[in-house]
Length: 540
Image (cartoon, rainbow, N blue to C red; front, side, top):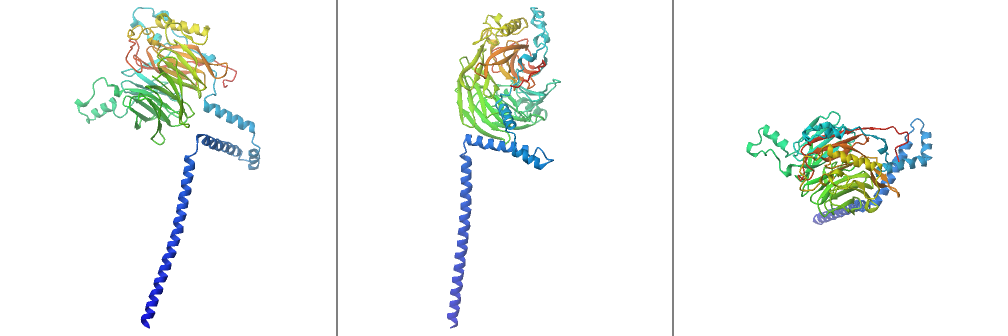
């Protein structure tokens, strides 16, 4: 009996343990089911986020922006919460609509000031004062007019970047040097990037590099820099060139932050998206690349150009315009992952700058300036021979779609004076012809206005006003004035105030050595002027 009871007790214990195990398994089963359901829900939410289209993203951001505006209106009156709630409930639709309109115009770059008729350009020295046959007798006051010039860089500067507050400028050159300028005092400091000549010289001075490893006095093409850009908040500086990398610095301190590899050929253009730290770069490898400096990472590569890309520009919207040797301008729509092709009737395009969010100006090797609009595949207008001296035998500078006027005649007279002012009187133009000085090297637009500046090798920085067309938007270009600048204007920037022009001048052109202006010097040129008072509002 005892054995039977013992066996029964053991069997009952085994049954209880089996039941407990089954209960634990059932509990774990339900827990696993709950975890799987949560994972599936999270995956579905992530899939929905990933499947959000660009249009849905715009609608979501617009709704969030409206909510922020209403919340700001509600919090505007802290003294009386009841009155504030009542004001929020009855929000003035007209005020909200006006606020939205102003923000939209600013985002599109269409909130413009009319400044062309207010420019008070300084009087330049008379050209007759330089009629001497000896080019060495020409003073800097004639070569650079009323502008302030400071000599720098051993080889020709190739690009320039100006901060939004117009206080600091950066220049880069073919010798690989990077200079930071105080625009007011013209004092400069040098920034050092890894692998540059300055970095190697510092290493040699510290005794870490053998003498036989050091480079000679002239650096090779891989050490040159061709592009520079500074973010709209003045925090980051980006430079690039022959080493196929994009180098990023802290603009304030000059500290090197990071170098981004990725291009397979020289980096030829850099631009920041306005209001962000998103950087766009172009190169001779026919690509445009996107970088996020906040994340410190590569984002995407845009393919489409059939030849080298020479320059690009970006505005506030997620769109980039680039020009290159394939005779095209290409407008890249980043969210839509597409681009538009605008074919130029002239030769290769070497410079480009946004005027508004949907309009830009480009310049080519034939000396023409072209105005473009996203709604038209052909240029809105073409101003031919914009930088060719008439007395050199070339045709008079004139817009291709407009007759001559008083402003064009004044500009032609200024072009005639360029020869007497001494511009390429001492240069090697025989290999390219007399029109070579008209090759457009740089273009800059004054943000929020219709003023555009262009530079070549004819010895002047030309100022233009973008005239409205009959159907609205940008139309033709009208000459406004000219500022003396001896040499090749390889980099240009206009201050947002409309009172400042900064240029990087060199003896040689930006992308080659096919020409040389012997009486020019490498350095930075600053021109300033005033604006006349205007009682009417400048905003359109």
